[in-house]
Image 1 (spheres, rainbow, N blue to C red):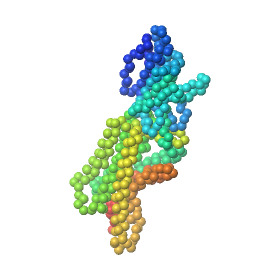
Image 2 (cartoon, rainbow, N blue to C red; image 1 turned 120 degrees about the vertical axis):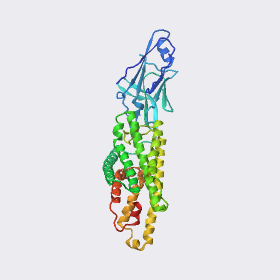
Image 3 (tube, rainbow, N blue to C red; image 1 turned 90 degrees about the vertical axis):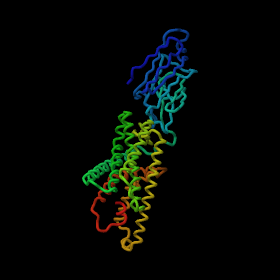
Image 4 (cartoon, helix red, strand yellow; image 1 turned 30 degrees about the vertical axis):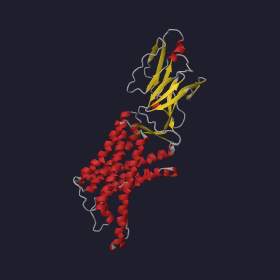
Length: 431
């Protein structure tokens, strides 16, 4: 558990030239000559300065809930004797590297041993200064040092560990079912051969949702491996799948607008190719830029009663808000499309004597519900994740939308059935 510690030797009171910071280093030390002068006095004997860093922090437990050490890193600075009360601070810079520090408070601490029996993390004698991509600890003594991370006030999770366990179970079961039915839809589509534009767009949405379900199911397992490159790739794949799914929701709404609202002069050259470039290309450009900026990595979701869920995701809260804003925009546009189609169906029933006598039959209602799932309207429950509605919204979202793939399969299967003699305006519109 300890890498080979460097032994630094001073033969006088002057600090030797600073070493070069390697790419993978996450700690940088600046030791004042005073720290050595106190020990040396006026003698010229050598002083061995030992610097040790620990790859695992199991020897230094953190007892507080929702609190952990930055990068799980502990560093020790020692010259063989206790040195404290330095007027010139010992500075230890902890680089964030791949750690997610959004919405977390950072405090520099040292391992305080009381009566040689009780030990705990203590911040006395250390000043914390957080800069871009790093935290600088300025301390007046030599000891074991680390940086404690804990959620800032008001940002801790509102869900208990039992609720998180149940929501995870519901999501996994639902996503597993959706994954099977989405694969079945793809097999049916491949056997059918050539299909019309509507069915092809449905299949693109099925592929995007299939990728999203798959990356969601394996995300936390890959995150637990602790391999940064793998976590970045997983986070990028998950985010890309999500953006593609939202984009194809919008393209479904656009296609519906052309068929039902605009109706005339809707021919577009290479229509499916252009939709494919938008649906798969734009999310790819966005994800490539984010990867280049290094904003993917390990992300932790803290629970109300302690502990955290580890996953691979965006490490920048601003980008998370941008993604959520994109979802809100997609939802708003598709709600307008869905509302317009619903109004047109209702008017058709009122204006047609035959349809007025039949009323809004079960087929019409089911067709409208199918359109709602096709456009991702059910995802709108996420807009209610605030206050006392937060946990309820999570349960509804995980239960319904984890089965989104099943609903898409049923929709696709219904559209591939031979048409009956009489169909409603809603059924015609959705196909």
